[in-house]
Image (cartoon, rainbow, N blue to C red):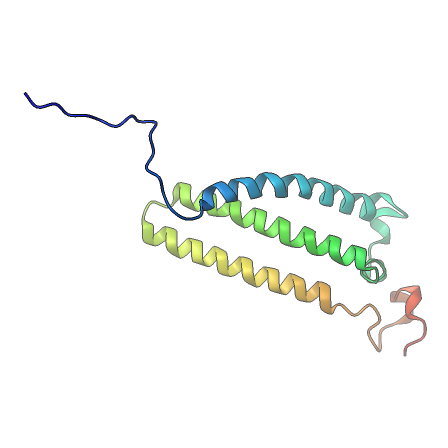
Length: 148
């Protein structure tokens, strides 16, 4: 009679390297908590302070982005929210894409779209000109003065 020993089902083989799934899980929790603060702060400033939604125009955004605090705030909001959403989509792709080739193509497409959107969003924030030449003075923020 031959005896066969079976490993305990709770014993997992030790893998070497970084556990990306664990770090993705931790990122989702940490970024989610930070995003709650960033989003509610964003909504409060844009909707509750001053004239609320009726005050949001080019001058409002230019006034906000003239302050480095709001540039950092909105950049954090952009990066954390976009990466948080992409990580969630990555999880959905891993759960539902049956074939490895489909999973690979979708994951690369998602990564490419995420990188492109992060670059475009950062360009908008960091190259924004609050006082563009030739603009009507009534649309510009007060700190621009007469630039025409």
